[in-house]
View 1: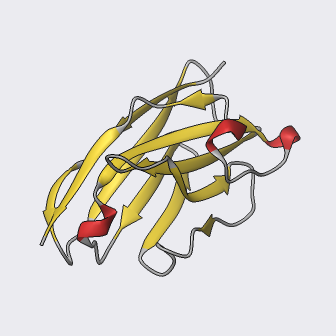
View 2 (view 1 turned 135 degrees about the vertical axis):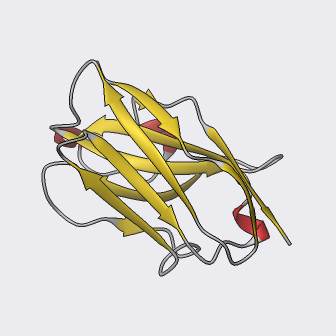
Length: 125
């Protein structure tokens, strides 16, 4: 079982940047797909992007494509979500999640077994 610990949220002005981190504890991300999701008040949790840990490229929701970048650091056993050109609509609680790569790729929250605690991102106009 993998445990996920997130960090890096905060308050930023529109057009600014933030980087979120998702670190795995107890075991590595090897064999997992790591996804990022977000949930704004009154809205359903939505897919932001994902990256397979053992190779392959990240892919993104259309709403963040070209502004957000997911990367991994094998040595640190950490996945990052770099968010640039932030907009007020990006305000949400952001979560990282993991699922076994053997189960295939998924963009729906119910497809992920393990979740971080969430971190608040607020973008002011």
